[in-house]
Length: 133
Image (cartoon, rainbow, N blue to C red; front, side):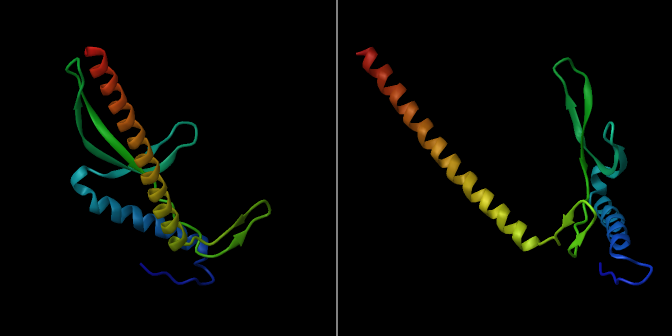
């Protein structure tokens, strides 16, 4: 999907059209899940993609649908400012690196938690064995 800015087709109009195009494409890709446009949200509703994932049978035997929504957000391709706020152009490489950093930090924290849990399990086991003697 490529777009060209013109006098009539401003960056904001391009973003709006791109959102429509991406919504349609995602719905096509997820057609096996009965994906469709929905109006979701309470006080501030938005147009999202609703996806039927399957059913859940509850303990009482009631069957209910399991659904998800996806909200497409087209990011600013250029820096812009309003009276109240400055919007930086979206940098996908920067956000990709931030995600990689997040995953690495999470893996480190998870490893520390696992090590502490393993030590506690070993200490508890040793204490039980000692008390059995």
